[in-house]
Length: 443
Image (cartoon, rainbow, N blue to C red; front, side, top):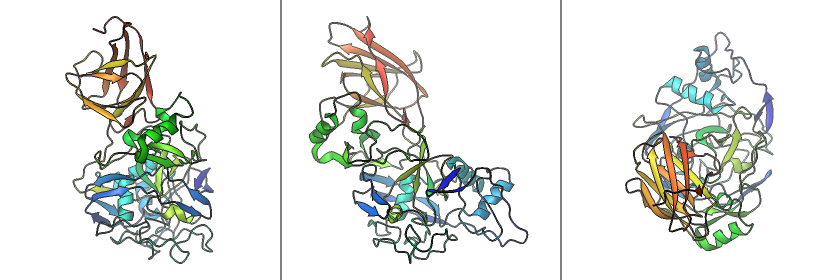
């Protein structure tokens, strides 16, 4: 079965049908947005009729968005039916005469991506950052909490949980749900897929939370790190996995308030960020008639498992027609480290290839903040052995990571060959581990 905003709507495998003599399909109008720098996320607390909404996965962080265009409404059933009839899109929605101008729902963001590319090869889903930019950034550059301003939703503006009206409306049928740029239904109508895979640590330094930094350590580790990081410690709650898929939460993914992570520094300004990886969850933005009022806030993040949740979508395109790609990283810890040990990190392109250029960042095991270095001839030395390390490769799809201890009476080493995800973090969830063993090449 497929869930839509918490309600079972149908089984997968609907057939698209459009009645004879149906009115012309309403076409989307791309609205150009100039882009700019804004603070994505918010620490504002929100509670509605369905309960409080977590703040820990939307820690504020600076983002720069390049110019792009975004559709003025969600893709309709009539538009999607054209793609189904062309044999490009799967029949993931029900299309009936008289409903062509209602938003289509698909239970897989891949179906949405196929439709956008069908319309125009350079079209794609908007990134999560672009969607929030369109909702919250006014033409003056000031931020607002909702697509229409700062006033909370009312039943007279859009239907939500507790309102008498509980039906999905036609696209552009809610004149109160329109942004200053003329984009409709960014807050309400139906939840919408965006391009990103979900991570609760989108606003955290290196997308890493205290739960990962403290894996296999004492229960007080997270509190100790938060105390050391002081004002740069993000605290709150992180949503538990969506009930639409039986997955195990990664360390630190709890519903109760807790230390979350070290905040990303403003100096590490993210430019056109997108999180792409093997996460089981995709990000959805906005809400529908059965969602609480908090779902309509421009900073609220939700996630759902593909094939288990039906959501709408709209298309975007970069002004220069380029794709939005994530930043590839390789994130790992070191196992069997000697106390107070130090490491030499050497990276090559592929197995036994040339020395690779890369940047290395690490979270020391007992110190605050993030340290960094740029490789000289493929090597970085004096890295604490108990750190969590993040490699930013400059090229290649495969890396050979070689570790050796420095200044230790007993030589230890480790070797790992890694396939890089060119669109994002590797691994997408959690951290890899490289185990040290006795060696004879410490130098």
